[in-house]
Image (cartoon, rainbow, N blue to C red; front, side, top):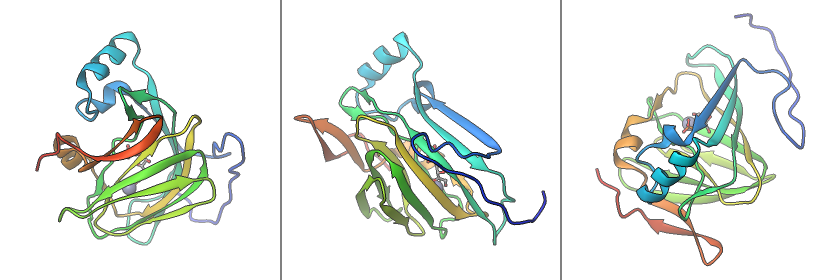
Length: 190
Ligand code: F6R
Ligand code: ZN
């Protein structure tokens, strides 16, 4: 890996970086156990393993001092009443933060700490969201278009997906009476 400064383009309306090194797709089948309505999940999966979100990453060494960065695109849609969302994770090095800049779309960042504090913050184009150290985070697309965010976080952060896969998030964002509503996750368990 060279170590010279660089720039890349990040332009409307698609906001796909003009240069990237890694491209990740997450489909419905990658979200097993995460949606509240398991019947709707199974029904949806039996008709199509739909693309839920995509991530474009720039490659940097995964060490302290580096800043990993890229773009996350969550597509619009629902499983039952629950909006399309990312898997969500804690950082393995819990004391590492992350910053998100929303480029396009409407949604929420669902967050919680291991101690049980919760926060759900709105995302819309032009808004910056700071995820402090210790907070697990998941983006939720409550809009009709793609939810697109630029993210940056410490190179040594790492990802712990297992805790969320096992316990879920304490809060969910669902559609109720045509609008997003934040509810307690009845299936949350430690
Ligand atoms: C990195 C980060 C984002 C997410 C991306 C996809 O620490 O928070 O880049 O990785 O939004 O979400 P996950 O990783 O939860 O599948
Ligand atoms: Zn993260």
